[in-house]
Length: 142
Image 1 (tube, rainbow, N blue to C red):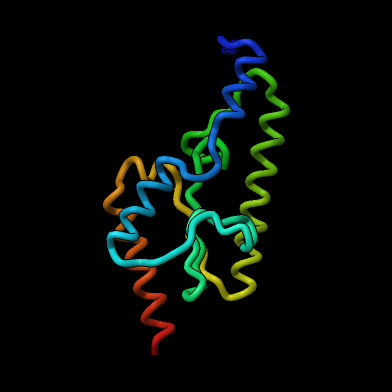
Image 2: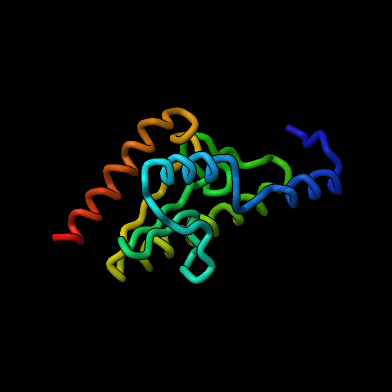
């Protein structure tokens, strides 16, 4: 499929994509806050700049977009500039694995949630997060 935008328009479009305070991040964080969990968002001091972090529970949460993180179910490599996009998404996937390894090696808990999971079943995602955070909290308070 040929891109229906000029190079300049496509470039402007891609630059406008936000990396923080996305609608998914807003939705998840508001609900976690409503459920009584206190956290920080987009913590620059933590490796990989997690979307949500609860340092006292050694927990980081990443909300991964299907496009930028190469979801196996939904990611399709654009046909224009194929090599660039293939390499870009592979670097992102490698970085995601590096970030996971970093936290696991230091005894942290890592939760990665795909964009489609939030969109398809938001209540289930929040219940899973609530259960995981509560389990970690209980384990640390023993």
